[in-house]
Length: 288
Image (cartoon, rainbow, N blue to C red; front, side, top):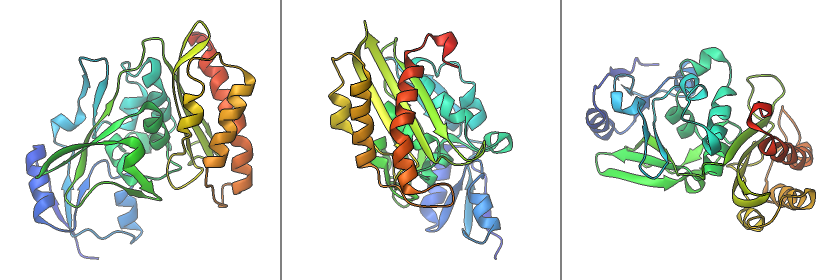
């Protein structure tokens, strides 16, 4: 394999120009995935554009409407301890804390993991449940892509040639919203057999806002928008949770793999959803 040309721009504009001027250039974020693929001979980019020195990609910014803008180069470790990821946003903090193992969390980034679009990874369902938007940047400008339109298929997403993720925006949720992330894996640090990302807001036991997505059960995060909307304005009960679980299981398209069978995934999905609702309804001190 030829040694790739390596560039370390200091600004986002400079990085975008490099990506535009080399057809097969790849942005290098933390390297947790891309470097491993290169070492295995699965990727041979002739040009690498390191993003590590671009300060604007590492910022967390509170938005006037109560949302958050997260730079693409924020580390998993940093997200897992980010105090502003509270309330409904906590689903992303919990997901970050379950990414792989500590060495990977110390080097991998939000943008890099999101761009890899592994449907069994931790960020895709959390971003889908939150209604996040992915900010794609290129020399042609910037565009905002809804999470449910960004993830397209197995390891495929909506970025176009020359584009990279600059940031991810989390929309505002009610202050009383709760976000929880449930993950079933064979061993700690492994990819999910099934994961549930749940964001819930209630008023006197009645659902006012709800976001839910499932990971590990298809080529992209699984959602059931109509079933979720049907719970709005109603109290939570076992029957309603069961109906949502059934709808998600029917929408899922799991496969048999080394971690679990498709049938097993469909079996445990509703049970994990019920567990997520129980956790989301607990007082904050008991939710951990």
